[in-house]
Length: 423
Image 1 (cartoon, rainbow, N blue to C red):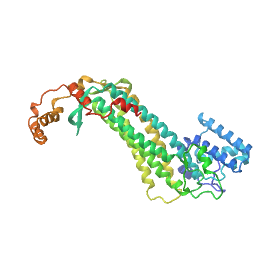
Image 2 (cartoon, helix red, strand yellow):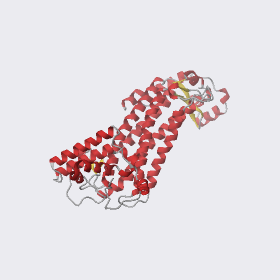
Image 3 (cartoon, helix red, strand yellow):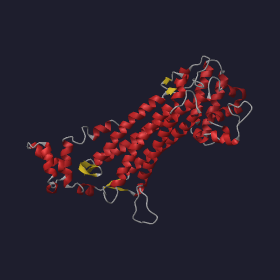
Image 4 (cartoon, rainbow, N blue to C red):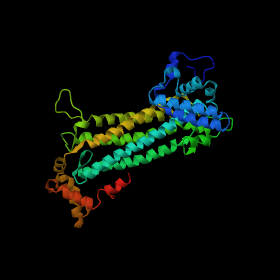
């Protein structure tokens, strides 16, 4: 297969294989076709392509999309990349007309626009999955809002909490993650096509037309920054995914701890737990453990992109190829993790009696001190008095104490129903 840069000589098969990132490019076939269609329409608009030539190019690009959707447009190492594969297919089908598609563009701005189109789609998908998980957690929180349980600091019993407070805390974390996703989307929503090989096209082209055709909100202005922004946009995008995975890992860590026999606040249904090949009693939190592990992978991809970005000179550099691979993997992991977390939350069983019985008197030590404060005792003296008489703390009804906190808005200023409206 002829390389787009081939001028009569080619690299060795070994070098060809090493330079290729065909597996990553396979994901980008639809975006290559979409971007090529917009570019072809622009070429027709400025007089490079006739109406018939444009019609034929658009027809073949649609054909490629159809083949790709049926897994019949498979890239091989000899294809070099998605740009070469698609252009060679156009040339095979259309001859001289196919050779015109690369007029006024470079593989450099092609790969940029493909990645940004992909990122936009995946960020939208991530947003929907994140909202789905947030809604699932909120439904769980509302169901168990009035079930008290111990709250912990330093993994030691601290003060009264509730299952609802625990679960809804992650809802608000995900809502904050949503803002970060939206920021990443805004940055990706700029069209770089027409920037060429980083230094523009020395002819009058219509970049605004292409941007509008591709659904971008704006054109990326400085043609050199188009290329320089590649790693920056990727870093911000993958960092947004890493932030989500950090939240998921914290949910998972709590699920692992709270579902142990030592705590027993939660149990895992058969649908979301696995067993042991030797121990019949085992009910393992494999989902939670694997999500935690995969969080580290996404964080590593974020670090990889930042590390690659350090000290790069202006213009295209081959190092940025690994950024594409890292971004695709980060999206795959994050989307799969969000989806499986929905199932995991649905599969959680709350052991209400265990939660209530575990609300032992020391959880209310601060309450005792505040009661003395109401009687005029300075807080420091009240703190010391209670601290010296912990063995005399009286039993309290955790359900009534929880009701008091909910009434006083001690747990949330907004009700869970109000939070639900934000979703």
